[in-house]
Image (cartoon, rainbow, N blue to C red):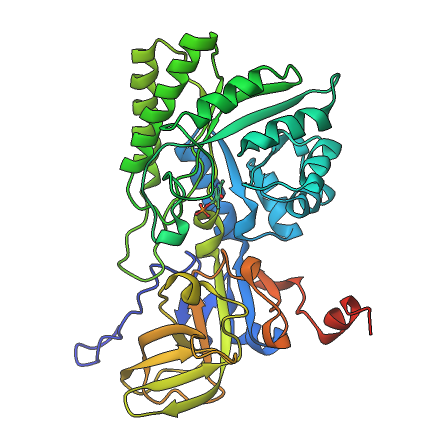
Length: 442
Ligand SMILES: *Cc1c(COP(=O)(O)O)cnc(C)c1O
């Protein structure tokens, strides 16, 4: 029992952390039952920590919220062999955008018929790999792809395809991640007739079986509304296709983009609301158009991997200038280009020791040779933060490692899975030997 005179400990806000995150005075913050300081000591920093149970729980949450829907994990958010196995075991499909992602998944044992290949510019190798491995569906994204794919399939072959259409919906957390409007590179516009024209050409190719329309509005969408508008417009196009060609499409892919919170208090997309309202909207629109309700597909990426990952860094230097305190860590834009690319904000935490001093605003920067190498500007950290301290960045599971670069030859960080109190290495750190191996000329 605590006495009334003892100060109430300030309970840290762990709302954007994996559900397993727990703070203890003895070991500090732990994820998956493993103290993060222990992970940093054992595997070095920077390092990515991935909570296996959080990934699996998120897959299960999707399956429960969308019972009759095919849920495809967007591989580009984060991929490694363990992730491929977890997604497979949890009954999800996969959406990939290159021969590399596709072949990696299939050679790791993922069933190719549960994989969808999309992409605005597929190389001959992408298409050849898709056909060789027997990918489930190819999403056509440009008119020229139709003849190329039909020729590659051959007159006796058969390939299921979808068509990526642009519904003319503006949604998403930043201009660079909005893909539902007519002024960007993805998809075929409904408004200007390109989509309908491409579909007519696909129907002329007997070896291509059109199973449905596909769209992806963008990323970090936190409201249900854009998806409902998209459903109405897609069913509108399906209705016109039915009138013109007698076509009844059995599938409808609404893409991903489900928004998550990166900092406490930020909104996230409500999956239960999304599921219920999309289902209702689809039923109403299809009834009005006298069409059977197509089977739904969705493609969450970040919402599955993002909140399951934590990036750990060690502080290398603390510099106090006129207006700022710069806390420089041993990673940065080479392992997380997102703040520089689209101004993403994070809520880093000091871990591994009790934060003694009161918080003061600091800017957490990386170690790279760019002034824009900022991980988190103006965030509160204990004022006595010093070299050797550990900094943890939550919500680091998606679009960190998959977007990492070799800049400054720092080496891409390893990935460590934590589960039930044990940590295991999934992806080792990139070494100078890896760099030398690729450098074959003089
Ligand atoms: C990137 C992408 C996704 C996943 O987006 P998230 O924001 O990670 O959910 C899904 N579908 C397509 C076609 C994509 O390009």
